[in-house]
Length: 489
Image 1 (tube, rainbow, N blue to C red):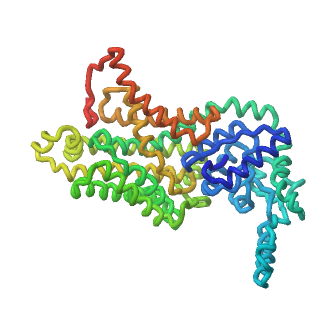
Image 2: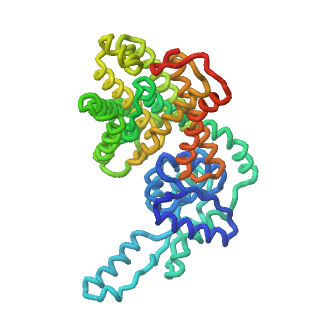
Image 3: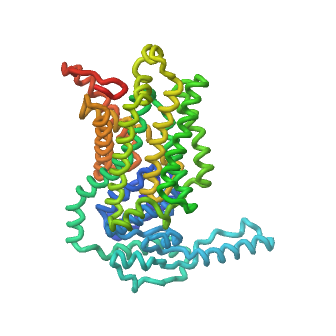
């Protein structure tokens, strides 16, 4: 697995493929385009392979804790492209000894400092190659590293270029028993379904947030793609600083509400059109998220999160813990929304998106209701980001990519499948739509389609879903009822 827009990763993958082919080893390669693709792509690859190789890839390394958790769960060895990630749970690597490489580089620097012509100082490959292994991961996977542990060699320039490939041959030389492969194949569909449920539940909270503006306020708010990573970044940085994960999760929700308040102010007080409001907030939040994180990504490896708390407290697997967290938060969000939207305040909010003339005639303060709706919507979207960052084990600047499409697809898919539901059931139908949408994406990955094609698949799926009403009209299938923006029958 590699990131398609990192050229260094592409080169390593191309070289590895050549060497694996020479050794007669079958290789399955998939590229990703954002950190949101890591979990589903890694799980898809691990369900079909015996060894998982990752190059020195910045995006993947930022999500290494998620990959090592999957390695433990699926009993698949992960071989890395550099020694520094072995400490984080990768089984091992064979390559340059960075301490020796530092001394080698220093000698070149001394030659230049002493006045040697730079044009005469040729490039050198690493001379010392070492095997670095993680004993704890080896025990977890039931692998004996005695024959290769602590091995190191003095390599020539030519040998150093092929050392990684030779190591890969040794790593994959002993395949798993066929019974293990058969068992993996038989459980593939169960893994796909459970993965879709766990991811779908967490993304459903984001979809419900999009529903508030899209269906209740009748606004297409693009700021979701900034609020989602804002919630993730806020929660991650609080957890890293030792704050209780539950408080950190609430903090992410509050951060999203503040972003929503800004969006509402721009739209209602400054009279900026909805589309431009979303673009302005989305653009501004990119810088805000970078300031919050302090870097492009932050790892939660070794930190206490809601997932680790439940895993330890209830002796659950990570997947089951995530599903339980998803069910609890989804149920809580829907319960609170149903109660809220049936109060006087909630009814005023729903009326705000229904009819301009009637809402003003009834004395509803439209601008206040819009700001309130923006805040609830973006708060829920940020809450989803807060939960997903604890599931993934890292926060990344690019986590919000495609968020708005995911939300729209879940909402519209639910409306196509089950129509004319009262508010509470309609919110649950969005959860169903979210799970089905994630299921489609996971199935696409299981068909060995590159993760970089998921955005295209999402767009095509959304277009087809939107085309369903037109198909019904052409077939003269007319609905007997209409559904209001506020969510009633």
